[in-house]
Amino acid sequence: MLKLTNVKKTFNRGTVTEKRALTGVDLTLADGDFVTVIGGNGAGKSTLLNMIAGVYPIDSGVIELDGKDISRLSESARARYLGRVFQDPMRGTAADMWIEENLALARRRGQRRGLAWGISSQEREEYPGLLASLDLGLENRMRAKVGLLSGGQRQALTLLMATLTDPRVLLLDEHTAALDPKTASKVLALTKELVESRGLTTIMVTHNMNDAIRLGNRLIMMHEGSIIYDVSGAEKAALTVSELLQKFEEVSGGELANDRMLLG
Ligand SMILES: Nc1ncnc2c1ncn2[C@@H]1O[C@H](COP(=O)(O)OP(=O)(O)OP(=O)(O)O)[C@@H](O)[C@H]1O
Image 1 (tube, helix red, strand yellow):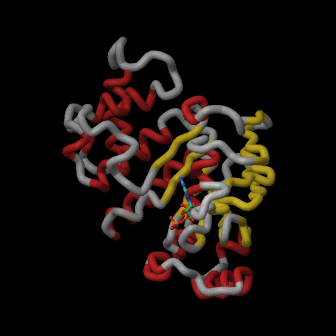
Image 2 (image 1 turned 90 degrees about the vertical axis):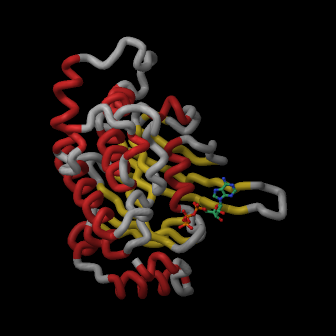
């Protein structure tokens, strides 16, 4: 279980660029929850993920994972519990390394030793099967450098790597936004399959309202650093995009200032 209690974050405090990015977020995720997150530009969606991952320290509040306070743990200490995929396909994989080396590094995430002791024969047998599940033909290219892959192939690989060690929480930050529509839908289908088959607790930020409604069991809407709408189960499944837009206007008192979201 992941639990955030009254989490606050202000950037550049006391300067002209001061920004209250999170104004007191309370959020409890049950094991296996798949939460989609939507909101306008600058609503605090990425900051929420960054706070959970420990990219920046929180100003106040508590973040607990399985009952343990992780608020003060470093980003690297939290990495063993978390999987993360970003919008940019260049992040999350090492371009100059082979596919199998990238997978092996992901397998050893959170462990002390790197690849010094090599990739085991057991791994060499296991990885092609995992790659074949992506259906992108990568299983025959174990020794291709990741930098040679397309954006979609790379994002699918990153997703596989992020989930390889069954993270306690998977954080997806607009991870299909930079892909063409066909590839994005393939990577989303893979996301759904991986998350649901393993029951991974997942937070997925998206600007695509349809995806936010279609995927996951719960949806939260953020505005000006707080959660303004939280819906799950049958009520979420029955939502439409226009209802969601209307909801946003009702709760925020304004129109959704996120062009990408409206186009998505
Ligand atoms: N490292 C940082 N330094 C200073 N300000 C930041 C930093 N990170 C985020 N902010 C500010 O905090 C606010 C929330 O940003 P955040 O990136 O979380 O929004 P978002 O909901 O992900 O928006 P978008 O959909 O536009 O990506 C914004 O005003 C942003 O400029």
